Structure formats: C-alpha cells, structure tokens
Length: 85
Image 1 (cartoon, rainbow, N blue to C red):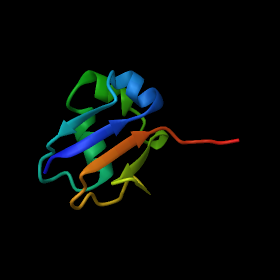
Image 2: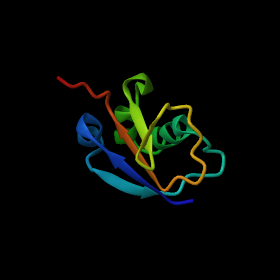
Image 3: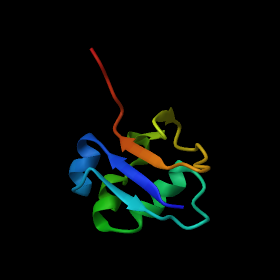
Image 4: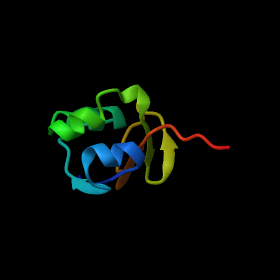
C-alpha cells in the first residue's frame, strides 16, 4: 500500500524534504506504527520522529490521533502542534 507522506514546519526541515512516497510493510497498522517504521529507516527520520509526543497527524486531510488506524490511507501528513492567535 503506497502512502504519500507530507511533512510540515520543523519536521520537513529535519527530514530535508516536504514529502515522499512510502510503501510500509503489512504490520504497520497505525499512524504511530508508520512513524516508528520511518524513524528506523534513516537517521534524518529518526531525528525528526525522536519524540512522537511532539507530533500531530492527518490521514487523508483529517486530523487524527497517532493511534489512528491507517486503513486504506493514501496520504499522511506529519507536523508539529499548531497554535494560533
């Protein structure tokens, strides 16, 4: 299952790109699993995802908790918490 990953703010800066296509293995079921799998894939992903509590996610443009099931997700965005004013 190919997933388009999108990265924003300091996550993008640490990874060095705004997005990529990934094809996670079948045991990657949740957003947290996906983040863990990516973190183990390279040093830059590991650094960006070192503290998952500082990350937020959206699956197919819907905000979700990190324990959300990916299902048939086509797009996952990872970003820091958003504040407004």
